[in-house]
Image (cartoon, rainbow, N blue to C red; front, side, top):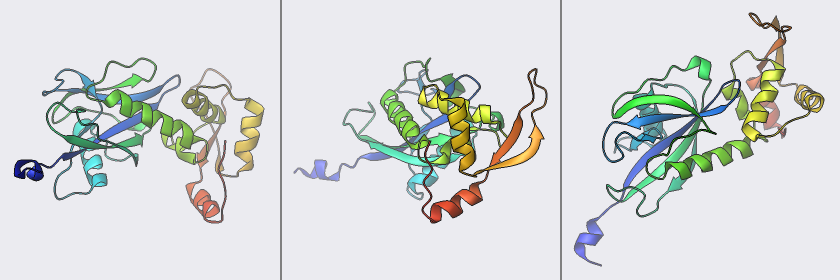
Length: 229
């Protein structure tokens, strides 16, 4: 091995797939790159890991710097290290996925992003680097994990209806669910707090509002409870 090759070290970056949900679509938040390479193209928010921070810290910092999102469910996804994935250098990226409530997070483009916006999963632009691949892996992880962990509640307002909850599962899983069976299963878990409130400002009959009981879920999980939809 040559001395020059031995001194060469790859660079580490982080990229974040941020999912949000509206009444009709599962969406992902993208930024428009303001610098080369791929200047003007849409991409996932992300950047290089600094020497004085962990991977998790880097992901949270980049998410806030490029979109303004400060708090979100954030979990490490996968490491992407194809040799030519970045034209600048030998760069390995550790991908994360985040879940946010669209109604509570106003996004804004900062640092090296010239714009930031939500896009429906079914109508995405071509993405820079290998971000199309990263997004597909994140979507598969979300769909799989949604069935056995209550992470879907991160996409909902704190107060929600059973219809909103079922719609969440149908949109993300891309399948129709039986209304009666779904409600029976979810209510039997005793993980929803009936707020004794109803929707306001709706044209249809106002539905009851619920809140996810995260504390009770953690207690049940500790005892071996299995969440499964």
